[in-house]
Image 1 (cartoon, rainbow, N blue to C red):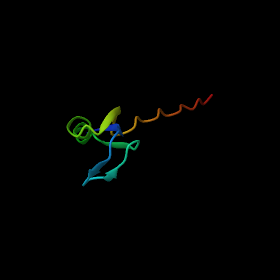
Image 2: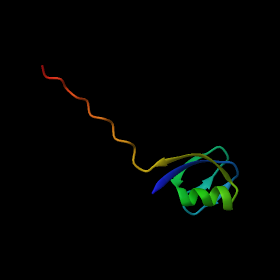
Image 3: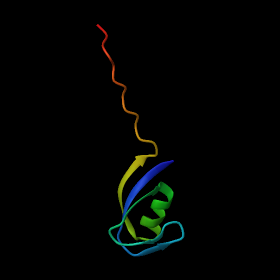
Image 4: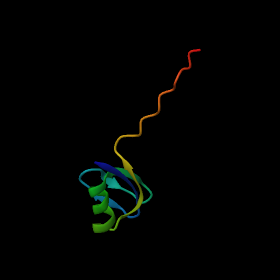
Length: 64
């Protein structure tokens, strides 16, 4: 599942997140974000990110 970040542009009242006000930033699943942006026309896209952050590379220790 991908997470999407959207910026709320209108007052939205949702059962999932309660009241969302203009200027709020919401991270939610892509399908719900699409619903708020396209169906409700109450938000705009900011970013889409993977659910899990990328793993940091392990440091190598030189033993000489």
